[in-house]
Image 1 (cartoon, helix red, strand yellow):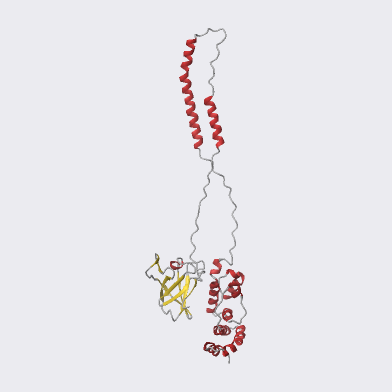
Image 2 (cartoon, rainbow, N blue to C red):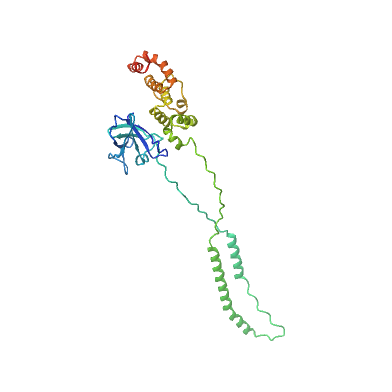
Length: 335
């Protein structure tokens, strides 16, 4: 693959990715990047996906031995979904690849919501008040006091006239009482409900970070290979094959003997299956010549086990009918 992509080891939380290629293929000090989506047949631009080609950058190119590396940021990473089929172009280098799921966007800000509490006023209180007011308004008027015994009786016509003269006063009083009670009832019904009492909850103890969480595994390739290998053994199937391959490539680029030995075992069809293959699922096409190359590099880094495995593999390489295997035998096998 002319281009390799992995999360930026210096920013494990997301939003940045590292592109690398052979130094001879990318000799410039700066590079521009264009992204083409093979599914929608559109290019990524500053305002989203578009029909015309757009280029991002320029980005600074750093040298690391025989590899050239550059880091792209959220302007690209935040807009690409995992496993998207893409065609990347870095200066003159073009590569078709599937966007890895461990290169994740920069996390966004958390949203803060509110809690609305409503309470209905019970109907019983209003009913009791209405019944009380109604009872006052509909009560019977008191009968006039009986005349004292022995007093002179008024003429019937005059008595009826006095009673009729009292009716407007009684009606006015009743209307005044009705208005007063109606206003009191309206004021009572318009009062807001009392605020609910919310008990304070004790603060929960902070949850310790998950050592196998996405953030921890995103920086797997940035760890020394011994620490990365221990983390892969602990987390097992929670590590993706892409994350394991990134850690393995970083260790091999750093010249780690154990990483080079494991690379040779994965290429060696006759080697015992390692947990990286059986549990994590990282597999490569078997190749005796590739296995010999990594065994030889591990032997040069001080691995005695790699030397033993190479001595076992050399007779097979010498007897192979293809030129590639015999060339590997001449280059990596001892006479």
